[in-house]
Every structure is written in C-alpha cells, then in structure tokens.
Image 1 (tube, rainbow, N blue to C red):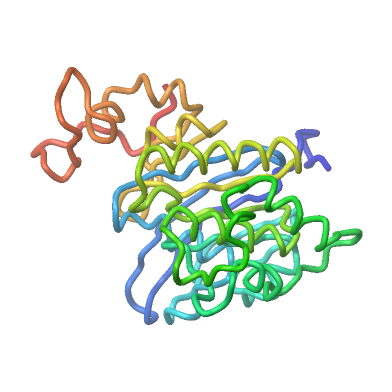
Image 2 (cartoon, rainbow, N blue to C red):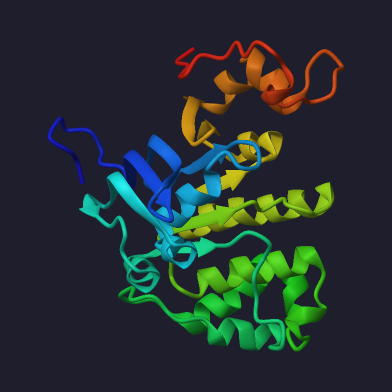
Length: 273
C-alpha cells in the first residue's frame, strides 16, 4: 500500500504522540516514529526516557497504569488505534513481548504456549507455529514439560517471545530483551529474532537500553530522552555520532556515561547527520 505521494505506507506510524499519567503527568511529548513493513526498528534510551510508555501506548496497555494518549495519532496500516484496548490491538496483529519476560509461572512451557489467546489472522496455524517456536528455541523443546517458574531468565525470555508468536503477530513489540541477561544469552536471543524476521517476514519494534545490541540488529533507530525523540537515523550513522559513542557506547577507552552526568549537553534536539 502507498500513501498520497506514492511512497510505501509504513506498517506503523506514530505522529506527535503525547501520553499523560493520572491526567496530569506528561511522560511522552511529541514523539514521532515510523516502522516499515518487514524492518527492525530500535527505540533507544536510558531508564525513564519514555521508551516503555511509547510501547504501551502502541500495544494498548496504558490503561493499566491510569495513562492515556492525550495528543497525536498511532496509525497501523493507516488506521488510527490510539487508546484502543489491548485485546483489540492484539487482534489486529500487534503483539507485545513485555519487559522482564512475564510468563505463567505455574504452567509448563507447553501449557504457556497453549494458554496464549490467538489473534484473528486468516490462515494462521497455531499447531504449526508451536512447532516453529521449538525450532527457533531448541532449549525450550528440551524442557517443554517444566514449569515456567523454574526456568532461567534466558529461557523465560524465549518462552515470552514464543508465546507472543502464538498470537500470530505481524508486528512484534519487544521491550528490553537484554535486561538482566548475560551477553551470550542476549546474543542467542537476537539471533533467534533475526531468524524469526527472516523466515516469517516479521516486523519488529525493539525497545532497548543496550544500544550496541539494538544497533547491530536494527535497520533504523530512534533515541529517546526525557519523553522526546532527540536523534534518529540508520545504525551506521548513529554509531558514528560522537554523542552516541560517548553517552551510550563509551569511546576512546572511557566508560559509558549518561548525559545527566555532564554539565553541558551538546546534543541537538534532532540529528540528521
């Protein structure tokens, strides 16, 4: 599908989004981003930057925290979905993998996958997808009868992604994949996401604090701070940017620092390279 100018319409477009908690506290201000069909887009930022709030606004889970989109639009396939309830958003094909790998701890791996509420995707075969989950994550196949509460952090994250796939998503929202996990586990999970994208044609919006991990996987990235987008571009351009190297990656042998630790913040509100 194309827009009025003949360009390919993004699968997801967020336009000048504002989100308020308890009707008074504005957490996200004027955020705009675009996710092309079949791409991986990363949303980077430190803790409290507004990344997870943006993801919850897209997925419909804001209401659980007494928050609401107060300005702007969220368009999925050109259709406005801001402030829709989560089950309606999931039914459209947008599925959230939440932070900290939330699973049903008293159910087995198999039962977690079976308990997932399916989306309404024509032709979607849940049995075939369950088999695919174990192909993407062989470690789960070996422990499919084990209770989820007994799994390691990496195994729980695998199960969370697998459960999301059982909903038949077209757009997968992944919140803080690397949080609390060893680098070797994160590398394995990112390889699995790459395989899911490649074989299923999945579109992925990845929220991350770990800029190195996200930029290695993404086609395009946005950087959030204090509820606003301050930088965006392809990964190569962001990796070459001095502020990204200093504040997110560390440079010239120095430790990675937060922009809050410096007196003069050099970064422009938005950078185009």
